[in-house]
Image (cartoon, rainbow, N blue to C red; front, side):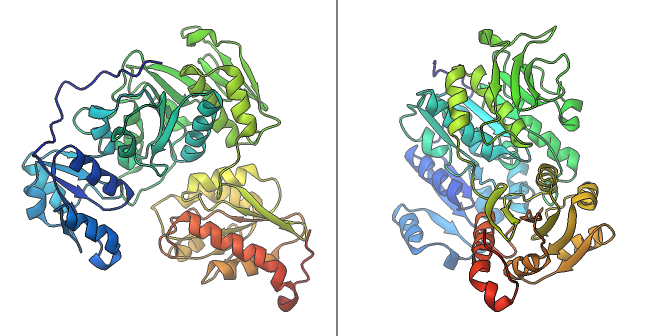
Length: 485
């Protein structure tokens, strides 16, 4: 596989430039190291207090003569920069950034930097839900095909870690968020060899002016592609299909149950078929191939769609059919994504803490056939809860709400199911156990961010799991007579 990528015409000169890195999280720290490596003078602007930064990091910054302002961002620092790097979590509307733009100081993110330095073909994955599953699955499939692969981006390992090193992988698999896509720079970001758009449902509306703005952001994953690149889109997503011609430069293929005369990965039951259309032909003679998913962890929605997207992406990138089937069969499901914790007294306890938006909860409820006691709530992200009304009416017998959004969510669902509000997740688990009957599912699927009560969705899921497993020990004292399966 060739590793040469066409580079933007403008040379990205960093040596001697003053770069301000905004945000000192994992990506921000990787950016500081990268810019130092390339001879830039680096300053840091962090909104949190100095005491929240580890002493080791403070010592490292000081030892490298890096000025670090804390407790907020000041316009004077931003306007002194030659270049401003923005970490994904930083809103692009803060006043110091507006002041810098007024002076035509470039503002860029990780994908914008990678556009100048990446030397390896990249397959990128975005969408409201399923990004991490598909990104991880693609990495697993390429490993099954004996390809050297780097998996990173929004999934946890910054792309800076790769472009700072030897860049010796055969392929890079990158999870990209809308926040990262928003800071692609003047060159429209990194030109992905293959770009996958999984789905779009309302999310992060606390940051975007409208749902349409959020959709626009997602579609910029295709903005830097050329005619030899591949765009993969969800044919079952109406929002995507309404805009599928927005970036016409790349070759477009589709996945879903309703492909009609579209070329791509067609889902029939638990089987994915690759097919041409009357106007488009899949490359590499892959038309007619079939992939059986009934014996894998991808036999149910939404993982059927995730698998179809990954199959098509991997095959377009030259991965052999046998390796793809092997990767699908050996892939282990990720934590906090419809993960069965245990069954107690005929009741299933399911951890879906990663469901931080209404679209993810919709998919979770759609996948379950039994009555549900839903544990939800957290920090509101501006989502439209009315999307959940019908599945809640049909499947949720009790809704237990926690966190900052519980009052808002209670008003949205009181007319459609039994709603209770509790103070902690532990209390919600105990209450769910008292309400559940054999055959029910207790589902943690919050539809909200975790940061009002937890450090991450992972911690929230871990607390849920610990509380559920504690039901066995507490059964006698709580007089619930829970029969352990």
